[in-house]
Image (cartoon, rainbow, N blue to C red):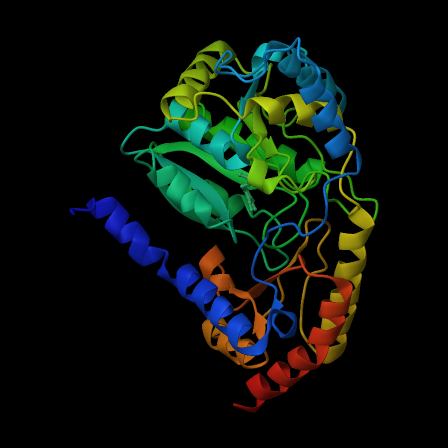
Length: 399
Ligand SMILES: Cc1ncc(COP(=O)(O)O)c(C=O)c1O
């Protein structure tokens, strides 16, 4: 069978992740699941909030509702109404216009939302700037619609570097993607940093003759620790869209439910919304999963037990620092992004694997010399992994 050139390349490019996954399966088979410390997958292991099952049952018991059919491609009207009310309280403060139900499109996760936005705005020669290190799937989401990701760098503490961002802007720039709280670094952008990004985009949009869209990818918004709040992009820049999901904060990753919200202060927001609603349909999603729309909107004020992630993070941050690893303490998410003790992060991943520790090299996020640990495994496993991290550090430093 002939496979398209683009997919052939993509499959080759994805082979590192696949090899790591296969190696993980092999190690678990050989040594037993409980003896392999799998820090590689961002797949939440906590149960959804206790009320989740109740809400599902209540909705299903109500036989007067016809919830299993198609609805408006943007999602159920009552769901978008409730979403808009919630978003006005959380990310819509200080705007000239309120976020209305029409500004909200229910999607197949944040990934579906991102594809919906990108399909609406990208032409074949378009570029999209992402701030490295960034979630590697953006490369696929952008190329799905003919565009290409251009990486701008963040500084040594992973804070946005406006100079690097501006340097990458040219007439092909359609959008900038930011992700706060950030996968893989756990950094949360401050209101001042968002304002600086907004000011740079306003100025450079004028220079290139079209507005650059700011896409804020926020699936970890509720996973902000140590009193940190997550500021909204809407106030910082009118040409902005938020994409979000319930994958991480409600542990519903497999249910594929999320949304996109278009800034109501965006001039001519209706054109973008119209294009996104059509994109949602013709990408084959048609609409977001119906039952999960109804369920998620009843759980907007809830989340998984964040203290569990916070405790895991505290333990590993403290222990790794004690062992000599350098790392920026994450402000949110369930990831850590320590510096590799040796420059070659791919080689260090191999050294960790000898200790049955699975991690993802920073190279895969566009920042070599680091590695990502995902804390989707329990405290006992995290504690049991520490001697392995110690041995790996010693070995790396001795070669
Ligand atoms: C930064 C980031 N964006 C988007 C996604 C996609 O999430 P969803 O399951 O909502 O599609 C993920 C998932 O890991 C992520 O880490």
